Amino acid sequence: MVKHQKEQTMIKKNGCVAGISHKEQIILKGIGGSPGICIGKAYIVDREGVALVKRYPVSEEDVPSEINRFKNAVKHASDEHKSIIASLNSDFRDQLDILEAHLALFKDKMLYGKTINTIKTDKINAEWALKKVLRQVKRTFMKVNDPYLKSRVTDIVQVSEQVMRHLIGAQDIKISDINKRVILIAHDLSPADTIQIQLELIKGFVTDRGGKDSHTGIIAKALGIPAVMGLGNATHKVENDDIVIVDGLSGILIVNPEEDTLFTYEERRALYENQQAIRARESHLPAVTLDGQQFKLMANIELLEEVVSVKDNGAKGVGLFRTEFLYIDLKRLPSEEELFEKYKEVVDLLSPMSVTFRTLDINGDKVLPYMKNAEEENPALGLRAVRFCLKRPEIFITQIKAILRVGAFGTIKLLIPMISCVEEIIQVKVIISRAIEELKTEQKVFNADIPLGIMIEVPSAVIIAEELADYVNFFSIGTNDLIQYSMAIDRSNRQVAHLYNPMNPAVIRMVKMVVDAAKKKNIEVVMCGEMAGDTFNLPVLMGLGLTHLSMNPMSIPAIRQMVTRLDTNETKEFVGKILNMRQVEEITNFLTNRYDKVLAD
Ligand code: PEP
Ligand code: MG
Image (cartoon, rainbow, N blue to C red; front, side, top):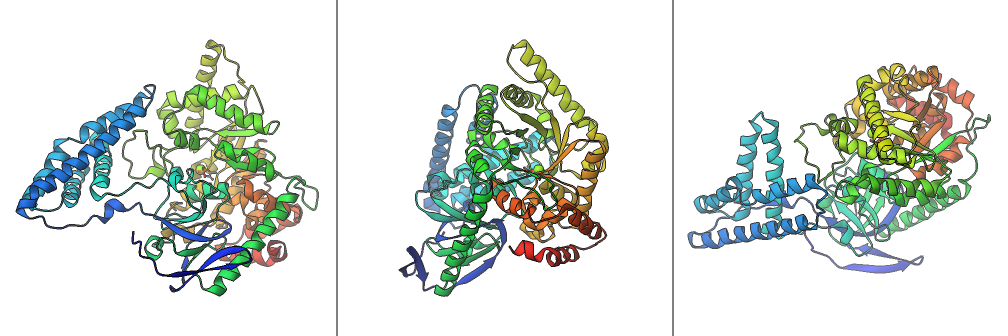
């Protein structure tokens, strides 16, 4: 990244230090990933290092030293790799096996020998030679049908990226190591990167990639930091230490703001924070509509640390605990005991509130870097969530046992993600029975009678919702994925983010089908997708008959306030009209006109 920095004057206004730059103000439009406004200095995290390799010729007499440079990089990368292996606990054979296999690849003929030959024959720099060899390897392996051989490409790519980082001297920036108050500007942040963010240091972030309701945005909301995503090329437009304004409410990034812009945004930020504070103060009040219908507003959480926010925002329980982040954070598979301890801590802290534990939902956009999986062309449609768990029953059963055990110490529910057919839920039940048998044999304390629910987030599950209801105690509608899968929109892809809208008539009608099926079969139905946490959608959800909503804790105060200003009968009549509409714009205009005043408040 270019570190060039022009002169900046620092001024002090309203007690805060703001930098007015002499550079031109740039306004970039992206997607609001997490609400809120922050102003601060940019810190660029460039994760594209490997793609930015340059080619240059090497003279005949410099070839030996170029080869030595390559050999040194391989040595440093493999030493680093060995120290990672040494730090791993021997209980984790799976990860050890992969890392040891990678170690052998550093000196593999295909990579090592060929790169050295390419430097010699083409007389080019080591980076370019490695890149060229890698391209050939990829081409060769892509023609092979054998999935094992195909998966070896991923191993080779990972190993060569490690070598490349040493060659180009790039540092793999660890977000957890950043030690100043900044706004992160990144090409992309994975959910795993995002959970490393230290709240007292990172004010907000923006990314080139990412779309609406991606997991990275969900974590940002959970952390309560403003984020704008899907900016395309922010990492090329912003320089380190530029002053930037992140407006996560409108999805705007302003680089080098002019003085007027800066003051306008200071005011907006103060207003927003004030509103949030007022709502938070009222958050313990009941969520009851004008006609007396009680709503249950619950929280979605990912980490133990969010328990405070659940309480502060007046949630009446955790409607969705995304358990995969513990697996990501730990950097290895946790044992049953570790899971039990962590889950018990959450349950104890929230008691007597109920906690819904959703079983591991990995792959898709939440990969466990240490798990060896076959390369998938379409990970979102691949071995994700329950599909992965049913393929790896030993991992699944470990988690189920920990959840059943914690059920003896509080009110909990068990939720299975991504169910797409009856067969899957039958198989899940077999695993639960096995877990119960094992716990009995091991004479551990547990609760076999925990309500079982499934996420309705795949269109096939909507269609057979009535049949699925015969196997479970509750449904939880996951609109983030339901929109992704029904509309065929990758939720992390900014190119198609314009199509991602919960007010699409197809989405509204699917939600209706699920609510109706649950009511007919007399089971509970909750909505836990991001759709549930947006005040704009509330009249529609209320009109469809939903009364249980789970959302990121920060959204609860605003939703609670809005619930108290609506009347269920009126929203039912209103939704009757919406169900006949065909286009998003028609629906959103109708909504805005009718609820203008309440929404404006
Ligand atoms: C959803 O898909 O709506 C959901 C709540 O689950 P996740 O966002 O974790 O995929
Ligand atoms: Mg989902």
